[in-house]
Structure formats: structure tokens, C-alpha cells
Image 1 (cartoon, one colour):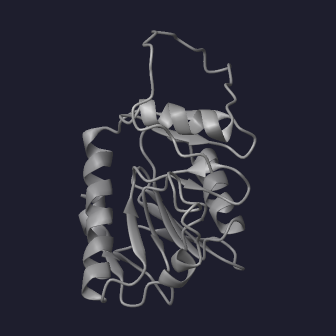
Image 2 (cartoon, helix red, strand yellow):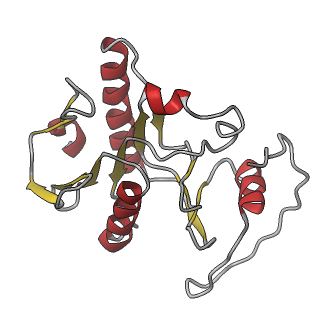
Length: 204
């Protein structure tokens, strides 16, 4: 893992790229780009394709805040087990992709197993628990592929929350995807014992 420079030298250029054009960067280049563009949520696929996610609208931002807040409250009341993270946190998955779930949690055992080098910049780990919240610009296809990638790289439980259709897809390691229609709450199950997300706060 290469530590990104804290204040990289930059030159600002305005360039418009068509959606059909794909950009590919190395891990080192991605780290520098992320450090230079902290206002953007950048991701990188396992193949090296750069994904640029613009700032979210207020509705998505508010929902994200509520989800991360509820996860934090559970973590604090449960004795602060493991590590919780919000949407701006990036991780390097074992397949080489750099991803930023909208909310996530890593168990203390797995976090402690990382070396100091693996914890630098983008920790070399896939969270045990991940949440992806669909915004108006997201396609279900891309989010489903991302959720499957999380499961294949170490996640045990994941929620794909789709406010547009009031549905939640629950991903579990070793199980088929479960689709819930307009649920009133979601359970953290055995992964996050006692964590219950009140969906009325999310749906609005």
C-alpha cells in the first residue's frame, strides 16, 4: 500500500468526458486522485476503472446521515465493538477494487489482524457489514454488482436500500438474496446483535 501525499501538487483542468469513455488508474494513481479530490467519492473497480461519484443530493444525504447515525448509536451502546465507518471511507478489497459503502462496520478481530501498513489510506479489508443506499443517479444493476462484490470479498451481511421502490435487498454470505418490500425495520442479525434500523426514518 502506498501512502498518498497529504498535499499533492495539483493542476486544475476542466475536462468533459463522455459516458462511453472509461479511465483506468493504478492503485497508486487512485490514492493521489482521491487525496486531490476529497469533495468527490471516487471508487475503482477490480479492473482499474475509475468511478467518479458526484456529491449526493439532500434527500440521499439526509438518509445516509440517518443510517450512519443509527449504526453509530448501536455501536456506542453495544460497548463500541469493532469499527464503524460512514460513506466517505474507502476500502481496498482483496480483488483490488477500491470501494466506499454508504455505511459499514468491521469486526474488532478482523481489524486487529491488519498490519499498520494495511490500515494506511484505504484499509485493505472488506467490511463485515455494508450498506448501499440507492440515489436517483444509481442503477440497480451497478449496485447489485457492487453488493455481490462485497460478499465475494469478505462481507457477511449487506443491505441494498432502494427508496425509490421502498425495497431492501438483503445479502448474506452463503445465502440467496432476500428482497423485502416496504419493511418497517431491518435487523443486524447475528453480525450486529441488537442493531435494528427503523426504516420509517429512512423512507421519510
